[in-house]
Image (cartoon, rainbow, N blue to C red):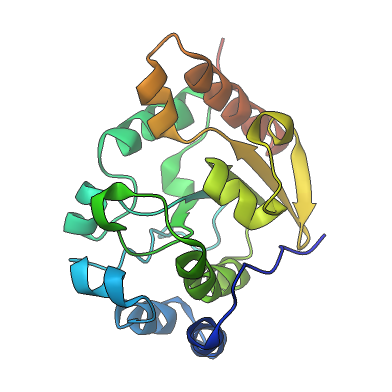
Length: 214
């Protein structure tokens, strides 16, 4: 299946999509994205456009896609560097994977004020950047962290509890939907989201031929 078209695809979203599609490589795309003002509220409040991290070795083995930057990410310009990032790194390693082999992206590249959920027009306007990133990186596997990311790949009616635990073919790649690490923090070390996130990352590792040590 193809990734669903985002909602409320307006003129600003179309312009972002054209600009992103014209980027010949990651460096050009990053430069264009850092100057984006398609969402005036986000552009006025941000410190950085958080384009994403890519492995130094080239094509990532897998891609982690979250919702949007938080305060730490906005301050540093890098994705998943706060508490959620620390837990994500820990669970990725426990699953037998390495963040160094992954690209780490977000659906929305600018922090929403107060860490609110991105609005539908913001998701639509930012979608062109993520689509082109996936085209350039061409990962075989994507891990969608949280409901917002899962909906971007699987559609607006996605129910995370029903979607997780198995791969979904989207645009020729395997997409795994799972919990966001912030949910794992919120429900605590013995909560279902942390266990589910680790289980899903372990399944991803298995699909890539990696296995967690017993």
